[in-house]
Image (cartoon, rainbow, N blue to C red):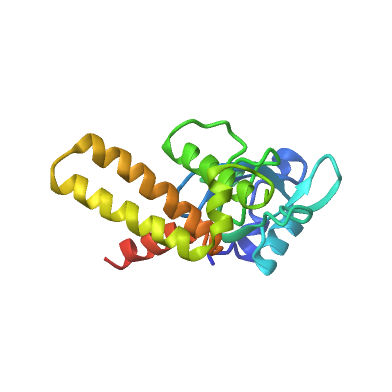
Length: 206
């Protein structure tokens, strides 16, 4: 974890916003901006001690650790100040949706990663709905072996489509493979973030 020293904390431009510093939270692995909060000195210290991002809530007038009621924590990786010492960049790994609306980010971003995160969230919801008649829930009911079998089947079909240079079929089969893989990961309680972290670590080692 990259921390701010006591000296660096004291040297921040506290006078500009009445003892508070805006803190931009960024996903450590994807670079996605997740949320904006405010920190005072105590919030910074607590974040660095507990490794969970903590803010000062202006509405509640108290310290507030993200996830204290939802368990959707932000695991702290680093805190750094900008060149003017009046804004913080907080890099973290989210343990669930960051926004109270259930989305990855508090900004309504569009794009591939945003869609993928929404799909992951939907799959997780289906897992918690045993009475649902959806295809996704039927996979969860069938169990790990059936889901794993589907991943294997879709993997073979994806490879065969590539082998015969059928790019339309390759696209369709790849979509099926990705979907069933996400279902398998959810079934096994392996997060998407953990996969990204593994890829990131491999990239850094190279």
